[in-house]
Length: 328
Image (cartoon, rainbow, N blue to C red):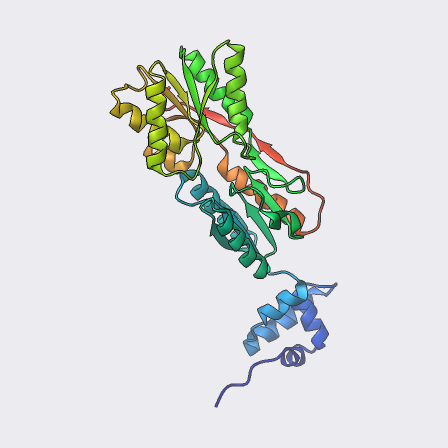
């Protein structure tokens, strides 16, 4: 014979309180004495009562779910960022739904539809697709990391301009005469382009040509290697490269060595990101390190404030540092 489920009124009877009081204890609503709260919890334990989580969520209009939409975890920067976001959200009582867009706008829109249908409490996003109208139309709290989405959505980013200056200055200080930069296509709305602006302004101040090779984030490694081979063919004089991320820096070093270049003796390379996995696998890379863990924490801080309906301070910019590995 099937055991009858324990109901709210059963808990109320054992605790000696009303059904409304039990509901208030479960939903943390209104003032209740600690003695009343303790009696209700004791009754729940005695009866092995399990609250109806879905009903509570509907009552509270809260799911404790947060959606994450990023390009990929097959990248040290985004892998560390998503792992840290997951850890930070879990610590604060949230569960996470992740969607990796692979920088495909249709895929990102599909993830957003699924997340919105799942009634998440908020979103943290960092994919690079443009013109996703759901971000403008949704009433959900949204926070972005390293991406400009809309004027109403705050961005948590590293100080990309300062980092670009650090990288370029390092190559200049090391005596490089012909410095080339790699970055996203110019029209992409990303704080990443601040690295390019810093490089170009510093080169112009030195009365040197500012040459940037544009590389799509979602290009294959083979496509990127082809671009970097073209860079060396078109500019055999290059003696310094500021790569916009560590993955590109690693590929540039591979291509350069196959072409007989010696790093750092006749070619110096500086990357950008400094994720833990990169520092482990490529400790010799000189790079501008972003505070990835702090970026995750500040993004969750902002999202919690927006979920609570609090006024947020707007976008956040965090400092970076140059890590000397020896490639520059």
